[in-house]
Length: 393
Image (cartoon, rainbow, N blue to C red; front, side, top):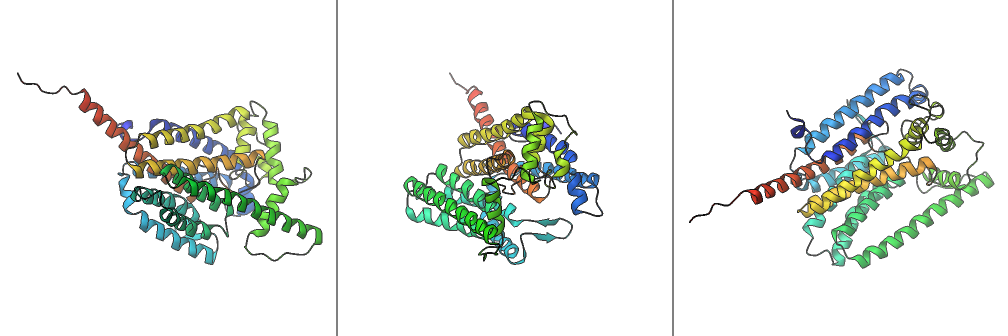
């Protein structure tokens, strides 16, 4: 089978995906040691790396298969997928953040909801195209979004915010009432700042008085601790955040070389949340800039595809999925360099693989499905244009 027929869609996106996967395999192998020895008694770094390699290969298969599906197919099952995601989120909220499935293992339903909600909102925006300026349409879309976000929020604040923001950006490009869009955005920003401030002062009071404060949410202490540690860093503590900063400082411009990381040996999440710091330590700022640029190129190609796609559903789906990949990458990289407090967001297509890696790959497969359709239609139009018409005399 010809390569062009196997890897359908946007070739630049395929190249970016390949390069990110190479970074992933190299850096996960280099940084997974402490995680293996700290959390597993029967597994070695090599066995965990092989698991990651299998996930990467399976993800490639998923992207290839999904790219061959007509993207309109996903619209038909968007509503069903939405309700399935809601049920999984309710189950996860009742029994913990993770759901375990035989053979597949455990996964977070929020990773499924992240992709499904974007596809569903894109479908709704396409169906309601003649009523987007009505406040009723705006509220209906918000209700669908809030149902998902509210179920994710108690156990994963950063993922809930990421899902909401990606869908909200998609609503803007979809053409909803701009007045209501900006008003709610300002209200939301004020609410988030107030929420983080409350948790900050609540945690500070706990440290000052030594008395445990009553929690409204399960992870409220974690949120407060992360914000407090970000605003009041202690350079003498051997925290993940401090190790990340030191790794970046040690990397310099050209890095210490692949496999020469020191700080990854001291971070249990070096293969996951802080893998960008390990990349910079080993490949320098040059490697960090390359990775940053790859995500920018990926997002640019998605936006370009959205403009070229004639169907509203396809255009909005690509815009939404591209936005969530890019935003998650930015959040992870900002955490690594200290611009944001720790969020627990992985670096798409680079961090240690699991179901999160696979589901993000499914999102990329949908993007490539839209790209294949766009390029096929453009090729057909060009062929018709170039075909000389028959003339009779």
